[in-house]
Every structure is written in structure tokens, then in C-alpha cells.
Length: 585
Image (cartoon, rainbow, N blue to C red; front, side, top):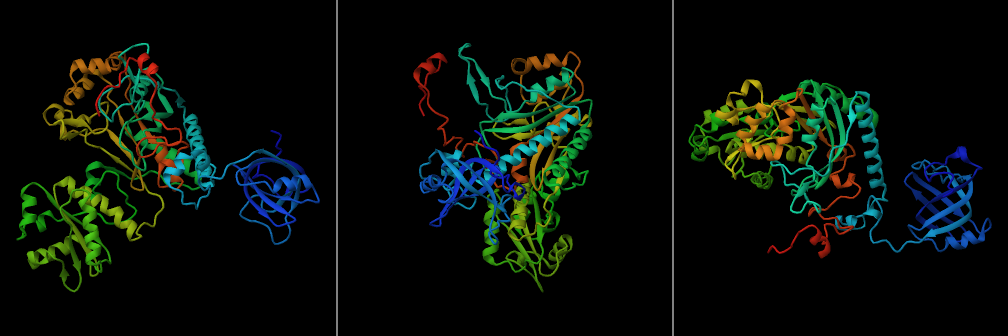
């Protein structure tokens, strides 16, 4: 097309120029003799005036215009009359006097509203995503995503990283989420898997001598969805050779610093605090804590588990714990408030929530079961003062930590306790393994290529749950945005880890034989990290869902409502793939 300017470009410096604009009709206002339209593209809006004294034909066509018609405008740039300047638009000081109008295409009445304040359902927005993407919020999100990705790529390029693409069609491997499988037509009965991450390939790149790799990588996981999860998503994927975990953390603090300067024009203070896994669980209950407010966990096991309350005594006898948090100034919580909080912790399998209100005397339904000495010790250990309330959960350690760990941010939001906008931290020294109740065996907490700490190697076969790993997560505002580890780089240690995970030598050879062979030809020490790009951008643009920063996302059922995928295929395609759909539901 022959446009001379975009719809967000013209200013008072252009007054007097003859111009051509192309775009969509955003609004139309008929003032009788004059018709005003706002024409829109991704760069902004421009007001156009259709005057019959300037061009009667254009004015006549203006009467046919409706929202989202695509038009071509010829005209002259004029200053807006006094009192009509729109300071919220870049183009707000000018308007275009239309001398020619072409209707390029027409639009049906819109099935959804294109507006940041519209209340269209998520289903409608995803069905008509090509219309939803015209809205300013979505346009801004996609623009911001591009800006952030460019900053990321520039940073890695400046630091000698090579961006290297890895295969999308690859081998299915155990561990992790379910794979998306792709049947091979030319190899009947065999399947590719879409990569859950480029993990194996980026380690092979280190063995290949590419000591600094990065990729904006597409990844696929067949798992249940939520607000910050999609079946296909994007990672900032990184691997480095001849480094330790501090090198990884240091350079990626600088990456965040670069993003904040380039995107927010803010100076981000580094280094970030670094906590080991045991400490964050002890203090905040979960391994991705938000520490922008207090509400740290206090251990009351030795105090409340040694008096006359049988329920608490039984918890301690069974190896459980009793912990709580102090909520300052909230001794005025009503019974209804406490009951609502109790229902919340029950989501995480807690059996109840005890409350101790610090007033002139300590009040609560359980106070009568404890001696004055115990109550005094409770107050002293908690540091609670008059007007505060202590909320307590008793039970198995994981249940208590989960319950209080998730109760903390819930209360912080409810009580408006979060004053700091951004808080980064690292969590490191994760357990190497966790127990899989279903399969009754250890499973990798991160993945089977994570290296165990040297000082814990003696426990690998005898007591694997004691083994810590060289793994680390970056956490922002209580959300994990990136995680990685130093990798195993010798075939002997990798074989020991596979054995601990119950992966037989035969299975290891079948699934990972090519990687184990590669280790035999001089593998450097290496490690890396991957950031959830969608989740990170979601936080930066202040959105509640990664669907708002992905152009064409799936819904919660992993379905694209716009194009109807996944869809059925015809019998000919199934025959070519040697697939029969004869399984009963």
C-alpha cells in the first residue's frame, strides 16, 4: 500500500503535509455536516474529519463506515481547534482533513468487543482471537514481548553466547511430564516426541565445544493446564561449560538487570539474596517464597506438642510438626474470617487452623487445653504483641509447610501487606530426589542429569533422599521464573543416578545410549538454566495469565477454540500412519 505514515506517527510538525493513512475504523461520530472517524493501526490512532465541502464523495462514503472497516485515507494534516487537543494520543494535537476515502474491506458486526474494558468471556476471546489481538492491551503485550526478547538476545550476544536451534522431532525419554508423540509415516510403529525441553541436546552442544549456548526454545508438555501453564510454551534456554553455579547465577542477575534497564528504565540492585532449600522451607514453607512481607513460619512443636492437648501430642508422636505465623494487628479477625482461612488451608490437606488472639488475655478455642506456662512460651517464641493473632497448623511436615506457605501470600494479598514491587531471590541446594508414593521409588526432583553434591555422593545408593543437588531456581515475587543445575558430565556418575532412579542399564542404553556414549569422548563440566519466557513476561506486563502474552494460546482443556485443534483426521491419513482408532473410551 502507499501509506506515507502510520496512525500513531503524525504530530504538529507535520501540519500542512499531504498524507496517506491505512487502518481500521475505531470509532465514527456523525455531527451532521461533519463526520469524524478515528483510524487505528498497531502504532496508534489518528482523528480524520470528513467535510462535504472538501470532498462530497468521501463524505458520502463516510456515512457507510462502521467499526473495523479497513480504509485508505488521503488528506492534509491540520492543527486541532482550540480545546479539542487529546493529550493521551501522540497524534492528539492534529487531525487529518480527508480529501479521499477508499473502503478497502468491510466488517460484519463484531462478535466480541475490542476494548481493554470489555467483559467478553475467555471462550469468546479465544474463539475470535484475531479480533481480540486488535485490542490495545493485547497489542501492547505482544509488542512488549518482542522488546524483552530482543533485549535478551542482545545480552547473550554481547556475552559470547551462540543461539543454536535444537530438534523439535526427537526421541521420547522417561521422567518429567507426558510427551506429545508424533507418529512416523516412513517408519511405521515408531514415534517422535516433541521436546519438553532441549536438555539433552544442549548438553551435547557442550560436549561439542560450544561453551556458551542459548535458544529461545519452543517446548511441549502434555499436562493439566492453569493460568501460567500451556501445552506449548517458550523457554530462554541456556548452557555453559567450565563454570559453577555461581557463574550461572551471576550472569543471569546481570540479564535481569539488563531487562529492567532496557524495559522499565529501572536500575536493579544485584546480587540477589541466595538461600538454601532447607532454609526457605523452614522460614517460608515453600521453595519459591515471596519475602516482600513478614509472616515467617514459627516452630511451636516443642511448645504446643508437649502439653495436655491430645490432638497435637499425637501429631508430634507421629513425627509431625506444629507451626504458625503471626499476623500483626489482626486480633480482631472475626470467627467468619478464621473459618475462611481454615477452609483455605484445608485445600493443602491441613485438618484445621488454630488461632490464638493476643488481647488482655490470650483468647482462642484451644487456649483452655494449655497451661499458662505454655501460653507464655507461645507468646515469647512468636514475638506476638497485643492486638496480634497467631495462626497455627499441625500435621505432617509437608502438609504444614504447604498450608502455611500458601497461606502467607493469600493473607498478604487480602491484607494489602505487599508494598515492594519487585523482589528477586535464588533458592539452591535442592534435594536430588523426592519419594514417588505411586511408584514407591525415588524420582528426580529436577531431572536425572542434575549433578549431586560431592559431599553427599556416599548416600547415593544407601540413603538417596539425603542427597542434595547442585540445582538452583530464580524466584520473582513468589513465582519461580527460571531453574537450572550443574550437570553430570561423567558416564560413571550418570549410571549411578540412573540406577538410583530405577532406570535399568538396558533402558538407559535404549533411551540415553547416544548421550552416555558422548560422555566417553571428553565431556567438559557444564551447567545451565531455563527461564519460562511466557511466565516472566506475564509478570513484567502485570498480567494474570500467560494467555495474555501469547498470540494464539490454548484454553484450559488444551484446545484452540479459534481453529478447532486438536481435530480429527481422515481415514487415509490414519492408514498412512498405521494407526487404528479402535480403543474404547
